[in-house]
Image (tube, rainbow over all chains, first blue to last red; front, side):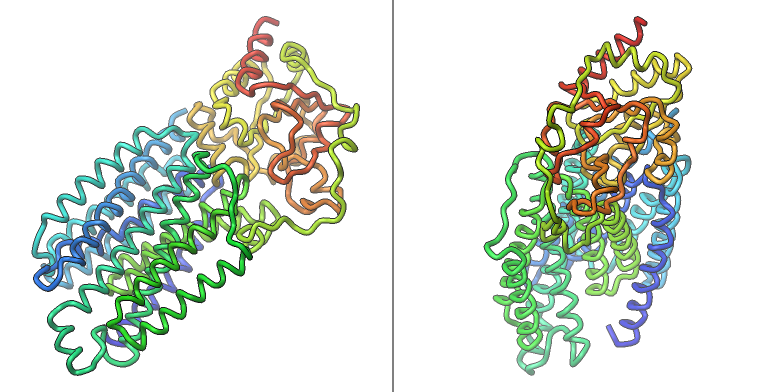
Length: 96
Length: 476
């Protein structure tokens, strides 16, 4: 990574923080629990990094593959559990 | 797959996350929003599987199967009353995942053959100069936040599940935590000077794991909504930092959205309790003047009523407001409350629910429980909107709520909870409080509401009391 890329990533990070504030403040209190579990599922995006670590070349050391495996298990749990439980809750809000 | 294509698909995934969160802003669009965000996740994961750096799939397939099976089982089995525990666990898994990724990246960089070559030359395996230092700092910070989230969340889970009932702190409280934080920061600085020293990484991990433990151990009960929201934020921030390690855009966008979401909820919770974040984290109630004794407040002034007497009061009521708190979740009384609402409405009475922001153990806890009992969300009214209506309310029924109805917060300047926004339940013409006993709430204060002339206490199990009221009202 060079300095330019880093600055671009930093810009992305800061702008996303502002976007987050705009988006989240519009969510009504009644949906705060599904918001938490739903955003929680989104934080499972670390699965992307976990896949890269778990599947990388292990000829030098397998430590990173094993750590990657742990990360894949945890992130998948986060993603699958998070989306399913959010969906379950939201389905209850929808019916009337 | 071409790197440009991969990055464009990551962009599409990030857009889907944003639209997904936007959808979560309205009950009508929320299910679709959640599906959009899940689609974004699927896109990002699938495109990553084609990455040329992935050479073997055994660990991946095994990990995904195990994680998906446990995750699905948990999500489908969990009871709505246990939702705070579930979210606490999921936060912990997210943090743990970021922790493991950062460690994997560290070992990959320091053990690869390329790293061996640079080590002979005395260079930094993470890159030359400032960039190398930034890479190490990114890895270290991901480790610290990930580890704090992991252990902190599991303590929060244990407390919410009531596996752990006492609150423990480090000797010295905040000072002990401060020392742990300083140890990990010192180790990060040392690691920048000596990137190859794996012992330093271990020191960072252990110090941060302990820090997570001791940050949450002293916090209990009604402060849990703040802790869960904060850990939610940490899990996102850890993800965003992991994005900096890997130079991955979608991780940065998604992680920072989750990070702000958790922070905003944390702030809402703190405002609703009139306490600062440091005050909650270090377990101090506001230093309040004179604490009134329970005898002084209650002495001979508390009246009680039986459920059938309450039913007679309800018989002529035109407007009833139900005020639920954590006690309703404890007693699993949400369905009983809904039945009461139905009977009242069938008699032409207007029924609404008053929801305090910190009622329950996580933001929105009461709303989910009442949604489960099929109470329409437009009957769940937030504090600011319902407070002016209490004066026109014939009967307010408080079930399992205490501190959030304490008029001392409004009137008694010397009280430790003075200034906390409360539901003005005492302004209703008649107040019914369903409660096991006169024991104080989390703040440890007596509640003058219980001793007011127009308040009647109904002692006993919340669910049973409500069912009895409903049955009695039905026969009138």
